[in-house]
Every structure is written in C-alpha cells, then in structure tokens.
Image (cartoon, rainbow, N blue to C red; front, side):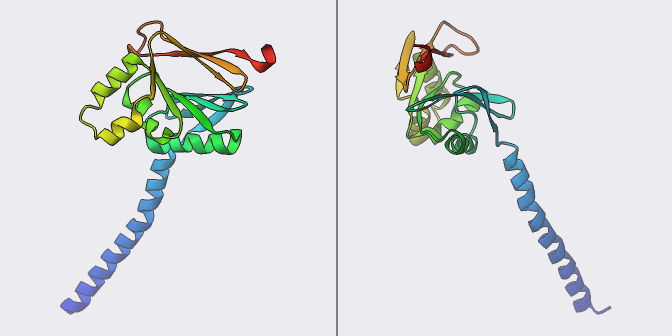
Length: 186
C-alpha cells in the first residue's frame, strides 16, 4: 500500500476517533454537571429543603419572599436552587442566612447578590480568613451584609424568623434558624 494512502487511512481513523470523542465529551460533561443539581422538596407547608450531593439548604417561604439557609458549594448549584425556587415557589429570595464558613456551604453565596446576606460575626471572621487569598470581588460576593452577635430576628411576610448563636457547633459561627410565629398562628 502506498505511504500516502496509508497516511490518509490513519488520519481518517484518527479523525473518526476524535469525532466520536467530541460527541461523547459533552454528554460526559452534562452528566457531571447534572450530578451537582439538586432537588427541591416541601417538608411542611411553606418550608422546603434543597438537597444536592448530600448537602442540604433550607428554604422558608413567606408572603413577601423567601429566606434561604446556606447557599451550598458552588455558583451553579446555587443558581439551580434559585431557579427551582423561582419556578416552584414563585417568590423572590430576600435573605440568605449562612452558618458554616466552609466552602461547601459558602461558594454558592455569589449567586445571591440581590439578597441580604446574614451570618454570625465569627462566621464572617472565619470566612474572611479562609478567603484571604481570594480576589476582593469574590470576598465581597461571599461575605454577609449583616453580622450579628447573639441573635437576630427577621419579620417577613407574616413570619418571625429567629437566628441564634448558642455557641460552637461544627464551626464557631454556626447559627440556629427557626420560625417563631406565622400569620396563621397569631
């Protein structure tokens, strides 16, 4: 067989292999991306969880909007949570309450630029320390807008939401979040 025919056959085989590889690669990327997408589930009326890869975010629905507890590990996951809140709950996210400063609970904060971000003062200090090598824009996008010391109360859309710091749990800035009253129980 002449060298040019053999070279053309080899190139044709290689191009077919690369062509197949290119077709497989996007599907693999899509499957990988899909593994970070979570599920929104109502646990009791007006209270949801968003579950993804073993991590859980809480959602409290009020007449005036939504309070999210923990944004989780990346911007894509947080945007998926927001999209599901938008399509299922159909109310805007007003607040993001963060507890653990670790990346798997705070990297998604960047998707909540339009919400008021809240965290304990130790959460803020520890997150600043964790991000000291990060660009200023990322630090600003992930840090809380409001920091509290012992407790903070949100009154939103007929619900009173308590945010408490009762001491160190998993991290020294962990918060406990619960609903004190609803309009129907007043």
